[in-house]
Amino acid sequence: IRMSAHSGRRIVDMVWEDLTPDRIVTPASVRNAATVAMATGCSTNAVIHLLAMARRAGVALTLDDLDALGRTTPVVANIRPSGNTYLMEDFYYAGGLLGLMSQIRERLDLSAMTVSGETLGAALTEAKVYNDDVIRPLSNPIYPEGSLAVLKGNLAPDGAVIKPAACDPRFHVHQGPALVFDSYPQMKAAIDDETLEVTPDHVMVLRNAGPLGGPGMPEWGMLPMPKALLKQGYRDMLRLSDARMSGTSYGACVLHVAPEAHVGGPLGLLRNGDIVRIDIPNRRLDMLVDEAELARRRAAWVKPADRFGRGYGWMYAAHVSQADKGCDFDYLLPEFGPAAGEPDIF
Image (tube, rainbow, N blue to C red; front, side):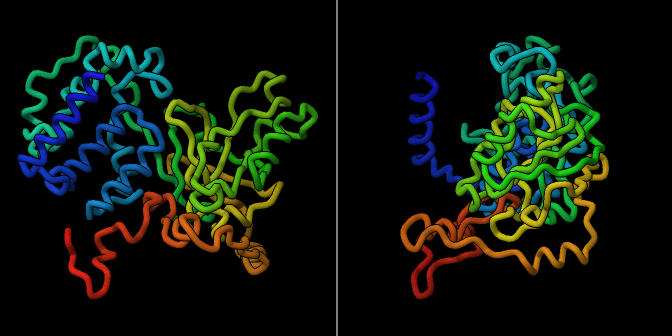
């Protein structure tokens, strides 16, 4: 409650100081934010939020930029699910976010302005770490890289996201037959069937759960393990979807496949039994189906009927972007510009 009240007071003070968002959300601060996110072993949701905020502010940020940071930024927050032992409460008492930023200050642009009205460097002057097993130094990270990885291939031409640090390493390079579901109820009924014909090498696929297919891109990406495999003692398998998942989720889950199946993305062309191959070191996600067959399937694909004829649903469907662009409305981006014949009041 005290933090909320303090934040409200600070917002009012920022108005009097004319400390506007365009002075805070800059290329330097966006890169800082992405670097800190990677160092914490962040949620995959951070990808969408960072892309949307940066693009709204006119800062060029892409999935490839985030993947490059994921390759080079060590995970220093030893908290679950990427870490081994500790929880977020332990992170708070170990020094919290300021403590973590002080550990990786050499990776940050300390001249970036913050909402406090001072630079990041000034804000970190008195930051401390009280437990360097919870918040590790750069010389002793939990993982040298791997908080997030962006995969591309004929299943995800515009990208998909996975947390390598939060899944069994045996799935970092893997291939197996697809087990495809077109809706969450269909998937739920199948995984509860203890006679389901599924092996630990199968790749479970849920589609039509993206920004438009959901609609709204629900957090269905951590697909439940089939009971048939749980009874055999298995706790993880490769799962693939155009949905999101919670930041506290774990497992070999590939998310945010773009473009999504609902708009004609290749995920919509996948069939049961097709071999899906993932190669995280080489950032690939492919279905091993020849191009001629894919062309036949693409020609036979039928666009789903529009759900909305008017109102917010219609506006959303007409203007929302795909996951690789942040799922934001196109008309709120700087390049959209002011309406014709109207002044740009901003």
